[in-house]
Length: 153
Image (cartoon, rainbow, N blue to C red; front, side, top):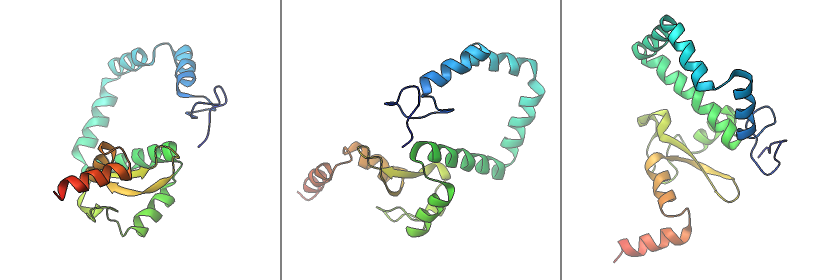
């Protein structure tokens, strides 16, 4: 995991800076970002209407945009490239590693990268239900054992 140059204990966000320092830099250059965006939208309503209308009208574009955004977030959060993600999909036959649900039945947002919260190591791809279940059980084998013991009573 890449660390920030400004604060070596923090995760890298952009341009060698942690998220807090990067946001401070952007806001000093442009003033308050949300105010800037609101003003821009107000002054250019036709651009935003056209942008949102095309995405609402075309589900393919909407899904493609969601995938592009998802790959970008995965790369930033886990350091996993689009090719690495595709390799994981192929390795798991495009199915959830726990419940064996086919990812083709799910939207891109319902496929999650499972990782160890202590080491950051990627374990595999899970559907949202299984990923949430693991998280609620504390991502621990002990939590799963207790749940299994409870179910077998």
